[in-house]
Image (cartoon, rainbow, N blue to C red; front, side, top):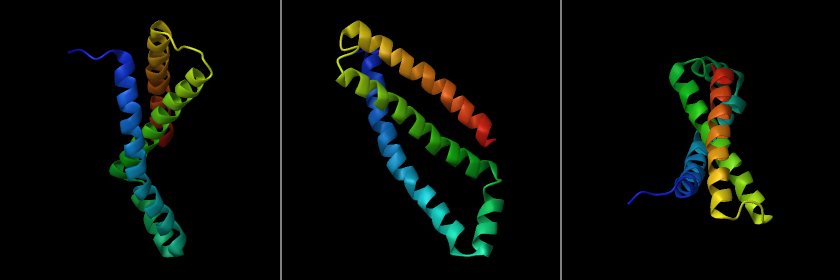
Length: 111
């Protein structure tokens, strides 16, 4: 059974929401570490220079970007635009294409 593109974008929208929820733990930890003391802020600052930390931050930001773009698509569809099958497919393609562009730009910005 082959799922249509609309199903894939819906499934990944839900999965990115779960991923953001889990990734927020990392961001809350980083916020806590940055506010504890000047020493912990300096330690966090040096650890954020590592490739692993940058990758984790990029992954969480990527999930947020995809989830936001797909959420805008759902809001547009709630207004009655793109509710047909052709509109749904076009909207899904737009979501994927724009998400890829924004995620790549976020990667360039982070690195």
